[in-house]
Image 1 (cartoon, rainbow, N blue to C red):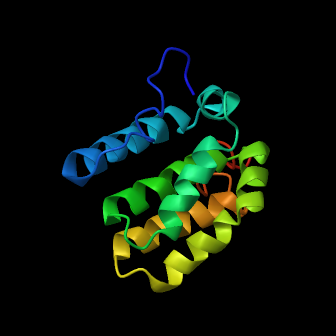
Image 2 (cartoon, rainbow, N blue to C red; image 1 turned 30 degrees about the vertical axis):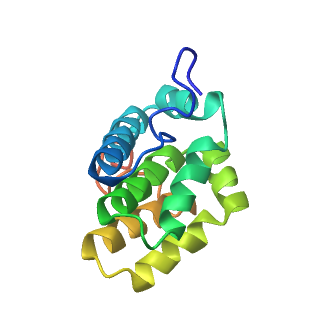
Amino acid sequence: GVPGAAPGGLLGAGGNGYSSALAKTLALFVLTHICDRSAAGQQACTQYRPRGLVSLCSSLLADASSPQVLRQWACLLLGKLAEGNPLAQQLAREEHTAEMAAQLLSSDASAEVRACALFALQRLTGLTDGTQPGSAAEAPTE
């Protein structure tokens, strides 16, 4: 975990009910934004416990009783963590995370979760690196 953090950390915090789900959602949200287009952020999220976030998000994807919003943010975090990050992609392969995202894509009742699962699946498998067609990275030079 993060030096000086409480044992278990925010994502591993015990408790139940709304406040625990809200705390986990907010933590996933913050971590997703730390990883967004930031190799340094991705590295920071895998430095201390490389499997930590991938395992946590994988467990949220595998647990059908996880609240919809947690499944959504777990998918988004996985996608941002894996975006152009071979280490995170490898860790996700070892955890069979892409298979879990594919299962959500085909069976989750929430359209939002299915959309987030597709995003994660694209990044986890390396099918897209996050650049958009016509972006500066892909614009033809004349």
